[in-house]
Length: 147
Image 1 (spheres, one colour):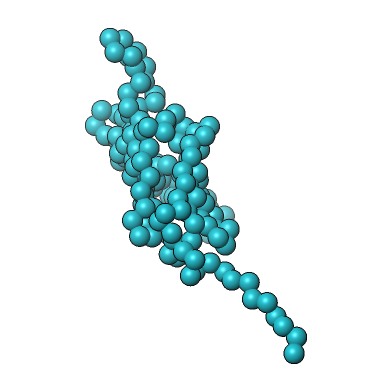
Image 2 (cartoon, rainbow, N blue to C red):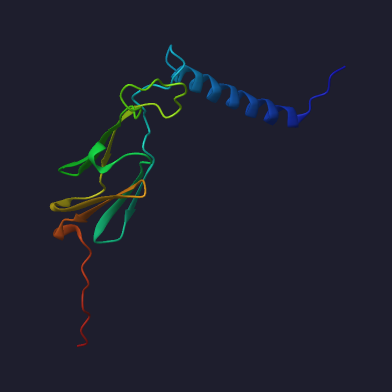
């Protein structure tokens, strides 16, 4: 006779989640066994707010500044780029784990920004984009007077 053991439910639930994640990963492989050339969710990004500006950082290892384009259209910041095949011309590739990749990520910023005050730098594989907020949405300090 079988007895119900609650620990099995959580174990099987975790195994089922793992199976679904593995199925999705395998589905992402194209027919040649390589990851797709266009990757969603790449690059990994963070967005910070320091009251006066938004700071976006994106991990772009192996990309040069000439391979990344940053655009701002109203309050939507877009990163577009491509890492091309880096094998020198005339060489045969025996193993290629760093495949060429194209990416495009758009992010709606939480408030209005000043399109004239945007700076982008790429250093040590990290893209840093600073976008100043529009003057009317920046916090104002109000002086309190005694009466």
